[in-house]
Length: 575
Image (cartoon, rainbow, N blue to C red):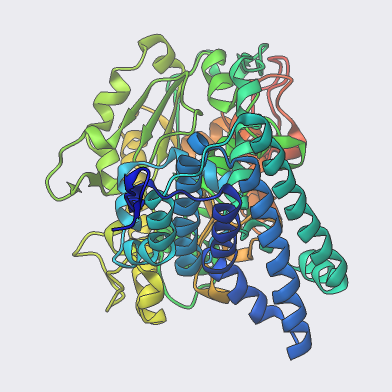
């Protein structure tokens, strides 16, 4: 032990008392995050690069840019009481992002982050796999150990402010230098592959969180803009003997490419094909979704705004269900998913999770046919005055929600085997992954068959004049171009995530009432359509008169011999 003649023995510094200089901690952590925390980005850049020289320029220039941005951000946060928790959060975020980017080809934008915030226990459980903790350990283990092994050295606030500002300035200089050195290659790369900007960890999450907060906070202090305040029921309700009952089935993650009615090589929709041949069901083959995830698409489907008008943004207006209810109809939303995303907030609603049906509800979730259980009683419990006018029933499916596609179909209804039973999709042989997904589509076909039978029985009993519209919220990627699941920014999303199936069936009674004949309806089947058409088409079909109804976006309007306008005309069947 060292000693001092005047002071006696001098104790060696205890390791726990060692500290980091803030600059050292910032630069080391920035380097780690730029390298290990951005592995998916560097794999993608390496894949896109052409010659060896271009690869070197892109990896070097882009790497320096990411390093500089991260260092500038961390320098501003290099305060003893702030750095540890913030750095821990950023490291963990980078590790989790790395896992989902590698496993599913995901990118982190504001919409994806909103999905994460709104996810439920079932979805989280489906995304768990052994590779997740391993990735987090490899990416986050070492930096977290170093961060918490030593605290930052404490200095007075004025010198620390200067050092932090200097560190941020050096980071900015690194960004400028990277841009100047590799501008041409970087500009071309970012222009042609916009998804790369959402792959930069952890800046992507910081940006997405900021955007999400800015988008949400102003809307929380303003009431929704009323829609259809003039809504009233049309002339078809005068003296009616039977009320209409329209079922809208909101599909989940069904892509048209694997839908039998849309020309898929496999017969994934045998029941719907029978309804098409024998009962007048119509398939619409060219339908585009409003978004690539439920959080965007479901509100947009029911919005009075088109996607171009901002229907894909956080809702500021009331929706279709508000207008239908305002007109005097009974509305009911039944959910078998992670909520209605605010669409059903002002109408009666129920969740299938409350059901405990053996064989249909196991493991904390239900198969879609559970929504039909006790449905007559649910409708009977609605306001009797409204119910006597008419009912609009919305069923929100679990559908083909991934990655655990094998959970979306009953054990005795799996026509395509063997199927993938892992939620680590890249580990499954492609054909088994497709089998699992196709089984989920076939089970949706089964659920729609049961729903149509239920509706037909209510028509034949004389209780209602019935109809059904099925429309999926978005599609899905199954490994094409290395992409899985959904949620890519719309501008760069492949057609597998945006081309969705849609079918409609109207009973003879509802055709007579609405003036929408089967022959004319089939003539609309191959026309380009989108989620933009649902709001206006339902208003037309249910004969709700309002200035909010745009005939140009009503896909059924060409089929009506005469729409009731100002209560003057009664529609008749059009063939």
